[in-house]
Image (cartoon, rainbow, N blue to C red; front, top):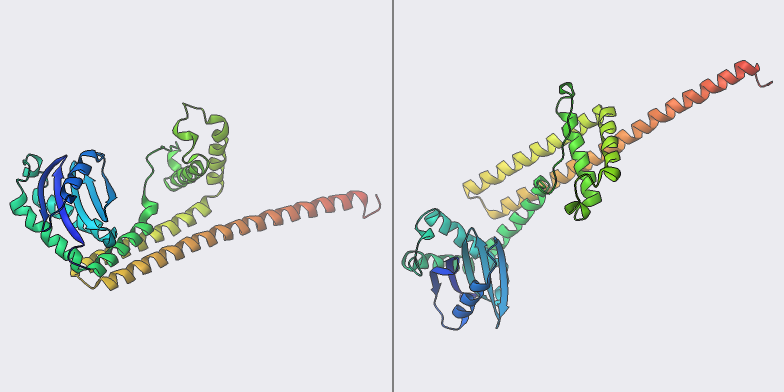
Length: 307
């Protein structure tokens, strides 16, 4: 990738540019400053296209990191550059003089760092691509750990019930509730307005969890195994990063993590199917015994088939 792919960068507090760097001339500096004035204050990433250039912004905790790139550079390298600059800037000035610094007062000490990060990202596109792939894979594997904050789920149980069954009940209720109301009327529903349609479901989930303690215990063991594998693999990834091993090895480890997590999900599904089949077998056996008893009673009363 050419040296001119990243052409201008700055770090700002609010709308005050604290440090900037470029080796080129053009109106891109004024366009970048104009966009800065209109950016939302919320933490996020933004990209604007203008005259064959992309204006990329990363807003976080009141500070804005910007880089202007040629359009052919794509989005991955500019965003990786912004992440590197943000991390470096926070290490140097987090909680320090950046909070009160005046315009361009950090140019001398941080302008050269912007140049270094530009050069690194331009010179190492393959490494940046692999790191982005790793982040995406790790995020995909652990995304089930994201905790929803829209709703709260509660159950009151006798102390002798322990912790496993109540937690399993809450997980079942959460899954059912999200399937029914995720992104729907639950967001605006008034107090007790869902009692009629979901109260009975709470009763059903309670009864199921009380009647199937063994199945719940087995499913809990599977989840514990998944959690253990995830923890071990994440620890291995951290060790790889600490030792500075090749990025190819890191990619392999995340692939293994995804594979093992998928295996455990499949095992969980197979176990649920097995438990369902076992329950059906028990029900069929009980039904057969009842039918046999009825037949015996009829035969004994009728003395054979002569009723």
